Image (cartoon, rainbow, N blue to C red; front, top):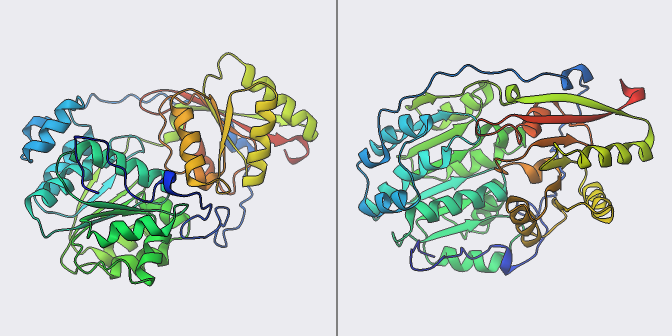
Length: 407
């Protein structure tokens, strides 16, 4: 459907249209695609916050300075956009100039607008151009769709949201309308390619958001398949929190020339106080969780559990104990997941029990605590989990449950 300010448009295929629980085109949410569990020294779960002395960033531009279409200026002004963040300030001019951009920045620094503004401006000015945006999870894909709708309202650009957990029918109808923006997750996009319902040869702008997360989740082959279908002459945006050799190798294989913008300010974990909670047995574990959650400092918490069934049971147990809790995992329909996340954002519940994959892409800035009720698979997973707290200049706390015999 087109972006239109007169009403809130909803992409077909969102949660209100169906309740399939498949993830990434029917793949199980808990699949780690062969990833083995890493033995982590529990001492790595204990760390004080590391205050960062950051220089005050002085932007070279204001949003009003950017040479973009009037409708975009109007939408940005209506939303109070005045001073761009560092990644926006440095990336947007290159994007508007038609250059490919590799952006390295912490989560929660305004990356969506950094690629969204020049992308939407290009599509408004060039009616034959089309863009593909790929995100690792449905939640992040929907957040990008929301931001694009806000920035591009009134542009009448047709778009489609292709994510798992939503029925194919409405997505097929959107695709038949020849959308000029397709936003989706790798598995569902690949499903449509294989069904011949999505042809990407005419798409000459591509965005891969959270590239490192997609590689970590095992989507390298899906991404290669998707990128190989695009127009040869294209503008590319690759955004990632890290630029290791795997990420760089993928980028180099699909973009010969690009500008690299790095505004990463340090490890996300630096702003999070980290400690462990030692327990003995199942009963002791749940009681210590109860005590942690009733502590006045625990204002808003995300609790990680290893499995979707365990997350559901734990959420039910917390509700039975009088807590305002909900769960988000691959066993829930997309509608249920969206409602749980919405309730959490609106503080209708202050505890969200989640599995790793379901929580990727969740951007809620006021989480005070991350609680690892189950140990993470790897230390990278641990860092990603605790990065849900201590966002947007805040400090947070991460607590990891460790059985006494495992210490």
